[in-house]
Length: 221
Image (tube, rainbow, N blue to C red; front, side, top):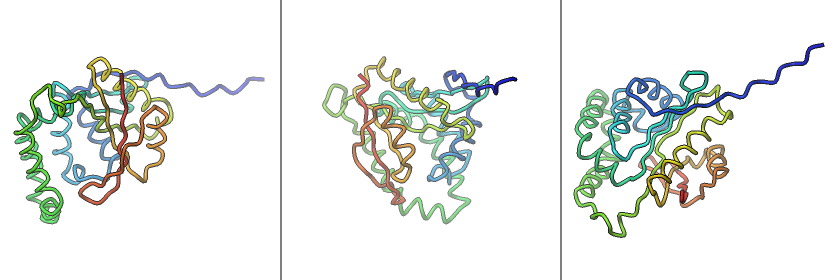
């Protein structure tokens, strides 16, 4: 009598995200992170957005693979101020062109942008030009986990844990003092996931679309 075989635990491997991964990353983002203004701006904008994580000196961009196939991704940064300045100085016009193309073709989306985001983005550009010099209290090194997405069929197999653990370890190597992320207030599964990994709830915030998010923090040291 033969016994049933136990299901094999997938072996997760990680590597640095490359340009060839961008279409798959955009697809995963659209499926798993479907609620958001970036998704409304379209795949061309998302592609340009994810390219910023391949060029920024402070960015972290990881691909998880199982059996040689992409299983998920994570992007973030080890220094939010450095990454933001990189995007503003070197990528903003490319992002603006990609976003403007979508806005010009969709008047309703343009109205939404003007109503909810135009002033905030303008203020952000102004702050970037007036950033505090290194060494001040405002320059405390803070990293951000921006996005993580896992293939539906490979959830609960350790892919997300492997990605987040790698991100935290990279932050430690770079001397990051504080890590931040946001989880949707109605996504209790994500909240439990981060709390199991040691992240602590910080505050509840609302985005320009009045969606509530829970801010999480972690000291990686």
